[in-house]
Structures are given as structure tokens and as C-alpha cells.
Amino acid sequence: MNNSDMTFYDAIRKRGSYRQEFLAEAVPEEVLLRIMEAGCRAPSGYNFQTTSFLVVTNPDLLIKLADIAPSPATNTAPAMIIPLSSKKESPKTGLSFEIEDYAAAVENILLAITAEGYAAVWMDGAVNLEDRRERINKLLQVPDDRFVRAIIPLGRPEKEVTQREKMPLEERVKWLR
Image (cartoon, rainbow, N blue to C red; front, side):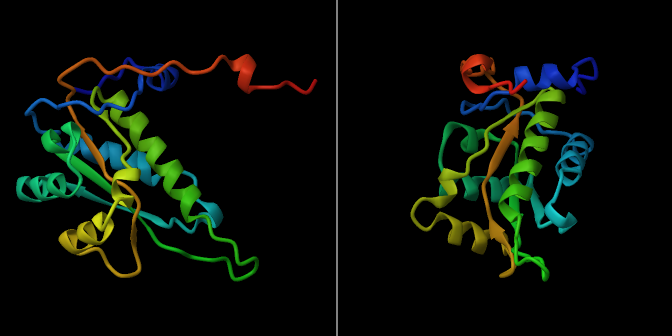
């Protein structure tokens, strides 16, 4: 169900990190395609486009991913997105923007998920614990030139999605007029 009446700013206000259980309802492939297009259209330093993605809907792989990084969200997600990075440096400056590229792409994905009426959580820390990244690499046969950044379980939320209170703009924004 595409929530086409949701504005960009509505999606920003409504998006929250959903860590609870998902309903046992598949995410249609056409929805996943729109979500992934949003991620792939994110800004990219030097347009190197260092972020790529694995979209997992295979039930056996979802169970194995949940075993590696267990949580209510991973245990019940009908789909997971795995962002991957590759390091590419500018020959002129030596600068690399894979972290910025990845973060911008994930934000686009999270907003698209919200606009489509689904929920998700960006699980970066869960990948960094113990040997989880290596286990995910092996399970999903991630190429050696790629780096698993996170897992993003997504689906139809079983409970209401909430957003934590944000600090007032006055505390975070200073106008230099």
C-alpha cells in the first residue's frame, strides 16, 4: 500500500526506529524496488556511488540473519536490506566518502520505507558486535571488495511506530544573520 498522500515532511516527522515485531506479511517486490531506487538516488561523494545493497526476502536467509543478530525486528522481518560499501579514493585528493554515501543512502531508504507505510530500524551496531560482520559476509557471499555496513529489517509494524522526542530547533540551530 503506497501512502502517496504522505508528503516529504510527513515522512520525516513520522519515521521512527521500529525495533518491535513485524506482521507476517510480505513486502511486495514493486515496493522494495521503489525503496531501493530511493537509496540508489542518494547523493554520493565524487559520484563514486560506493554503496550497493543486498535485498533479502528468502525465508531461510532471513532466519539465518536473525540468528546472527537476534532482535524482535530481525526475528520477524519479512525483508532485510543489507547496505554494502566499497572504498574508493579520489586520485586527485585521496579523499573517500563511503561513510557519507552509505549514510545518505540509508536515510533515503528509511524515508521511502515510511512513505510506503512500512517500518524499519537501521541496525549498524548489531553488525559490529563479536564476529557478526564476518558471519554475514560468509552467509550472503559478500565480495571481498565490499564491506557490510548494517542490516535494515523492514515490514508492516505490529505496533505503532513512535519517534523519540527531538531537541527543540532553538537548541540545535543557530542563525547567523
